[in-house]
Length: 208
Image 1: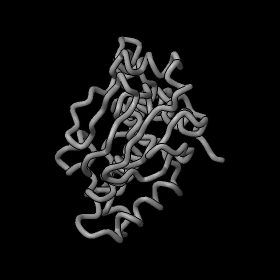
Image 2: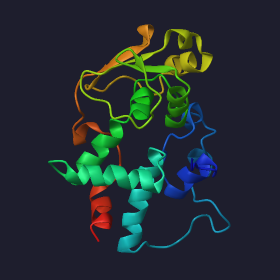
Image 3: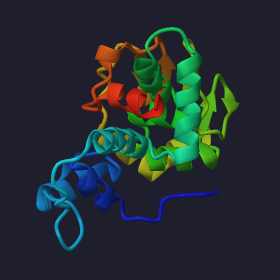
Image 4: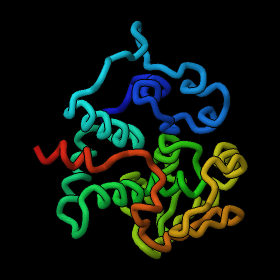
């Protein structure tokens, strides 16, 4: 299976945006964006002004790397968003937010989306009482997500909960961290998704 081999901090520096790829480290003064507020490489990321295509591509890359998807995976989600009723760009963001690995992260049971995927693949997560090892699973309204009984003693999970990197301020999630479970109450609206991504540029890119 294809995966990223590049240092995650370089990805954030290239995009000029905190993508929270390193969990706890992103909230400390060790964060690469805090220490080196310029792009990686000999010329410190200086590329001048982007063309229209370049701006569209950068927005797509920011969003894709935020959720750590490979190009083929991202395009598949986009094509699904196209077929849905409503605005394609907003549909895309909502579908990404509904991924199981993202939901585990937003509920505070994982310090990063990459750690969330590890938890899911290693059998630490249940959906509606059944173990599910598919990070890309699309969570639906009413789904109950729980950490398995044996995994409640996992130090990394407990540290993530303790740090509360993602505080439960989302009105579409109901989380009981003491019980290691949460319920997906509603689908988020575009205004609910806190991101600086301009999804309209991504739609323009794929419309060419």
